[in-house]
Image (cartoon, rainbow, N blue to C red):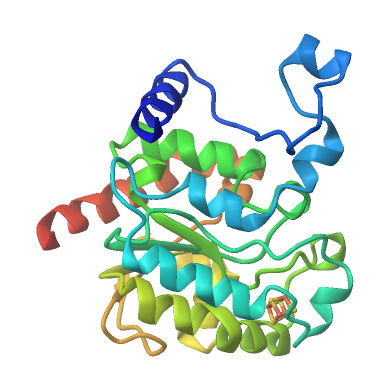
Length: 254
Ligand code: SF4
């Protein structure tokens, strides 16, 4: 049964369906939902994050040890209020992708869409990143992706240093210990600052590897945040070249 379900989901994915929702026990589809094939807003928003992490269990595999450890980390901290960002969030936005991947992508913080859906990089910037990753042959399912801060800052402002430090201690340091990536790709200057502990001019520092003071076992690679590229499309080629360089490095070390 489980294998058949997996095969069906794979097929639907190949056909271009990217989102799957479950229906609460005992609840019937509304007429609107039957017409559109999509769950009502309330249903989608109430979907627990644990369920989202089950969707991203590594392809074809059992739920691995890293997935279990990440679920435990989430369970311990799902009500975290160690910084003010908990006041305005809808929910904590944890991670997506493959915890066994050698590469961890790290952005700044969730945006509106991510806050609503409980998954990182699912808005326009995330879709653009997926497209570029697909083009260079490094599909999103093969990477681990998260943010420095797990809660959406009000009005999408940049997270404050105190907020980033708090969230590093609650989540990101522990994610690094669990996932043990070989290389970390910082998407944008804010993520780079969290790792390097200093102000970063991303336009000057992008496209190169650096030692990683926060997690010395993995090299740090810096590039633009996809949201920045969407606002400055003349940088699209550079962004893609950066990601190609990262992929070549991954091929060498794995
Ligand atoms: S941003 Fe991180 S530290 Fe702050 S409340 Fe959210 S989970 Fe906790």
